[in-house]
Length: 502
View 1 (cartoon, helix red, strand yellow):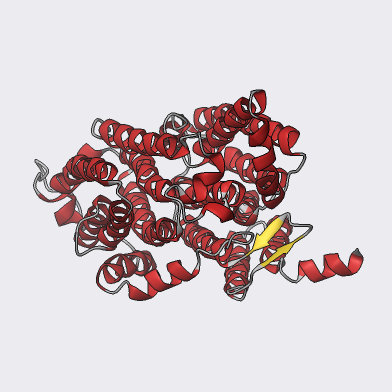
View 2 (view 1 turned 90 degrees about the vertical axis):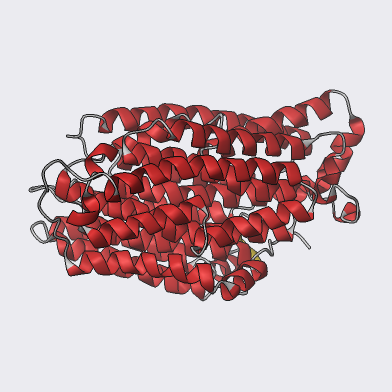
């Protein structure tokens, strides 16, 4: 037993590093009370080390700790997305005015950020229902506290409380669904559940109905994590009230971890290897349940509700929150296809989404640092006061819309191609219509920056060189991946391999 645990720990090094960095952040905060830069530097170095170890896991296809956690190309890809987001958010935190107030010690902030990243790592590789729940709770509890970290902000405590209430409800629903699945199959391991499902379905009657109910309850829990409609109502208030660094982290990394867990749960649990040649493919094990239609309806509702409500938003953080909801709807289209092509399209989209969404949030933070406002009306005349930031934000918003030659166009192109190749033309048309709707509220911001000058010219907004360099780190991939995307597509196609599936 001890030898097996030591063997498995060799595949668990990134998570161990994050755990150590979390403890080190607390200890360093106690020792270096007046030098917060040391704490942030240690955390940043630790996260980079964890990221290097994740890259070292490329090509692994193993399951550790009695099949609790899988270390496979699929998990590694999502861990890269999560750790890149964590590193960039740590850099953002160095320049955040709302965090770096006089007298505030950020040791616990960075410790919670490491705990949140650790929970998302576990979500990406969880191959057991119990591990899925524990990983979700670790990330959720950390994010509840972080979303209300700036207690002096009027809407911070409200955001944290709403997040806690909605999170507790959705976690309870998901746990109840998992308990039903365990009662029907006698196992918590996803692969073992897959083997037991045919006999459960053969019984029929109440067993079949119970399995359907359990599936819907589990989807409710996953839907909360990815902020899919109708489980999205927490996102706008939390995104608006949380520090903008945490808002950016939740919009990208939390969504990535949720999608990783959802895809693994669906594909490993419901994949019927004996029926892969049938039209319904991986869903064949649940013949009689039209799960594809359920996911398609969730996708349409999510993208449509997110885009339509975003039109009426005046706060840019809140607008980006509804935009994030809409993007979750786009990515759900890849799960509708649920084959390697659809999953690869989701992976491509996530890597691109990381740069363009974090870039938009970062520019909004830099502008809010100087103006003290996130209101769209206060962006009037910004093009002349901060030309570089304004042009950068315009490019990020154009990419979020999905227009060429930005990377966002490539992300949507692969999702649409996967749908059309599998005869989901109507869903692609709905997504195209939603893209047109999103163009309206993104262009509204661009119009205010460049076409609506202030009555009286305001002072220029000075930004430091390091802040501008960070913007460039996000801006260059957003443009480059729109023109040269072949290597990213190849990496995504090689990362669809999930442990326990052919």
